[in-house]
Amino acid sequence: MFGAMALAGIAGFFVCRSPSTTENDEPRFRVRLRPAVGWLSLAVFVMLLAGLPIFAVFTGNATVGLIDTFYRAGSFVFGGGHVVLPLLQAETVQTGLVEPGAFLAGYGAAQAVPGPLFTFAAFLGAVTTGGPSGLLGASIALLAIFLPSALLVMGVLPFWERLRRAPRVQRVLTGVNSGVVGLLAAALYDPVFTAGVTNAASLVVAALAFVALTSWKTPAWAVVLGAAGAGALLL
Image 1 (cartoon, rainbow, N blue to C red):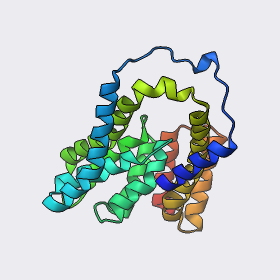
Image 2: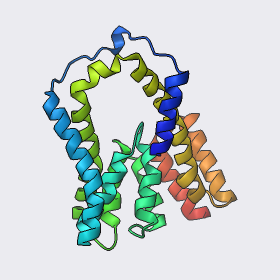
Image 3: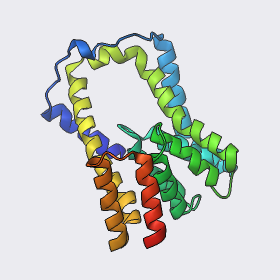
């Protein structure tokens, strides 16, 4: 994922044009942080990203391993919560922490409730095996996956106004934003489509759910409940 975003940024630098800045692009309010706070936040972000895997291996502590799993997942996401799905699947399902069926069921339930998809981490933390689970696991996973974003925001914010006006940075960001569309499509295909659509009946249920959302404007929670009922009867 990081390599794909890097390639998209490089392509944007050479291919995309710098977007024009309008009054709507100006922030409604400004949060001022000292540059020292930004550098400290970035340093903590990098130290945790590099140090947690090493600490988890040397200690063999399940709690540290859980923190490392969700911290890394939150660190490599750009452009939307759905992009985190392949990372979470690799870190939880493929390592045996979460059952594949529980992973997809939790993802479906997350679509029926408001809020960012990152809250899906709380469900995964609650159902993990071989370490903290339940309320403790949910709390650890939720805090760990949101922590990288908080550190990066505090790290970049003191320099953002200057960076966002630089034409070269704007071209890179345009390319990265375009690359996110491809990542979202990849996340839709794998793991959602490949694991969720396994036969003709599941394909019909998925197609009806898509039509209900896009054409009939059915609420997401109703679509999830309807698809769950159809799955119980047909699959």
